[in-house]
Amino acid sequence: MTPKIELRGVKKRFGSKVVLDGVDLVIEPKTSLVIIGGSGTGKSVALKCILGILRPDEGTILVDGEDITHIGGAARDKVMRKFGMLFQGAALFDSLQVWENVAFGLIQGRGMKKKQARDIAVAKLAQVGLSADVAELYPVELSGGMQKRVGLARAIAADPDIIFFDEPTTGLDPIMADVINDLIVSTVRDVGATALSITHDMTSARKISDRIAMLYGGRIIWTGPTAEIDHSGNPYVDQFIHGRADGPIKMAVKA
Amino acid sequence: MNPFAAIGRAVLTVLAHIGRLTQFAGRSIAAVFSPPVYGGLIGRQLMSIGYYSLPVVGLTALCIGAVLALQIYLGGNRYGAEAIVPQIVVLGITRELGPVIAGLMVAGRVGAAIAAEIGTMKVTEQIDALTTLATNPIKYLVVPRLVAAVIAMPVLTAIADIIGVYGGYLVATLNLGFTGSIYLKNTVDFATRQDIVSGLIKAAVFGFIVALMGCYNGFYSKGGAQGVGNATTNAVVSSSILILAADFVLTAILFHTS
Ligand SMILES: Nc1ncnc2c1ncn2[C@@H]1O[C@H](COP(=O)(O)OP(=O)(O)OP(=O)(O)O)[C@@H](O)[C@H]1O
Ligand SMILES: [Mg+2]
Image (tube, rainbow over all chains, first blue to last red; front, side):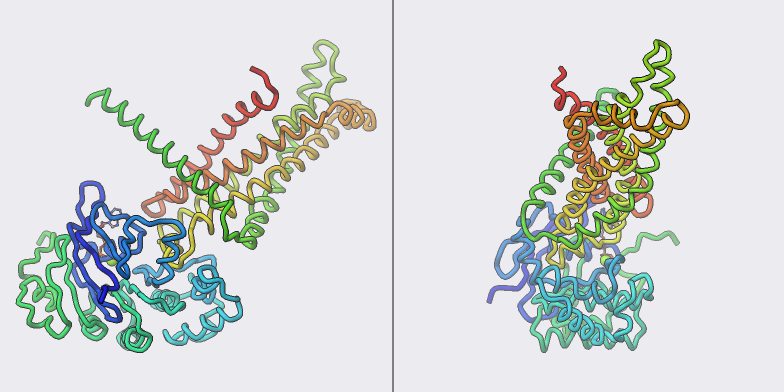
């Protein structure tokens, strides 16, 4: 079977700073993969490279077997219709009301009627635990966690084939975090989407993923089924999932 | 520090900017002529670029027209040519001051607002979010502003022309002893279609410049609040300079003087 997404030797640097140094990654259809890794290792950059927001310096990105590394314009828009993305900072349109944000991809991207798009938006908001009266508010009137959930509703609004979640549970209370975990699991299990998530929250990672990949030093240093994460035999992975300050990963802090 | 290296680097930076701007302008113009067209967004921009600029453009046009009449009177007075006031006022306003004043005012008001809005969207990843929602940011953000500015500026300028001439008329009739009906007759008889049309063509070009520089600087802003601040300043400064440069070039072209 063709992988849903495949990265081959993707490299990205900013100036002299190398962030991705040859990332290889395969995501099978209808599975959920979580990328873990320290802060600033380039997890968000990797997602943005796949989405074409950042252009990789080297390497190839395939979606459904199609090389999308260098496509643009209408071809890019067409591929983008397969995707939904939750940004780490929510990235809501602050000039639009909450429901318009959620319905944006339906109205602008797919040309749906406003009335129908609004109903879907309200239903999606309910799925992330937001009531219908929130729909009329503007993003600045929401708390951080509420904004995140609106971003989530926007990402799943058009029932995309592939969904990226950049830290979906950061900034949420533990109960709401679990609601969101369930939502991600059900979008993959029931809707049949392919999910790629980034998280630091190991409870969430274990719950939502079929496979886990660890990014370190610009490469994927370990990848395997979620059940094997505790027996990876990789000292970097062990240190990360147990959150130990001592180990092969050195944090650049002065004592 | 090698001075040649420094000069070379500066030249390369400028060339890189020009190249990027040219590319951006090309992509934007191409996007104007390809579907989808966001009519509602163009309407909204017409309001904020055109309608809300009316007070500031009207007020400056009134003042400029008034002061122009006064200056021409005082200058003409030196050799008994003060009767030329209505002719010179209408010529100066329609050909030059109407479009240039409107252009500079809109650059300050609208160019800055466009750069700040798009710049903020850029640094908060809203523009990235647009692409992930299968919406081309150039079409969604740039095209409506470009189209609205190119439509609104000639209209604003036409209004500025009328108000400017009226400013001159007020001063001439109230302070300088002109008879109203004669002033107006001289104005209408003297002004040619070319005077007015050339000014409106200029205005359309200035509108394009203001919207393009606002969008361009917003799109390429980086680094948080300070970056957005720089983008805003650059948008106003660069569009003002380009307006004045374009004014010269357009005058030379439109009136075949070389
Ligand atoms: N647009 C950019 N320009 C310059 N450097 C950037 C840019 N985007 C990211 N970087 C750099 O790339 C590195 C990786 O950033 P990224 O946002 O991918 O980290 P991350 O792994 O998502 O971290 P976190 O878990 O904290 O979100 C960082 O060191 C950052 O400074
Ligand atoms: Mg990140």
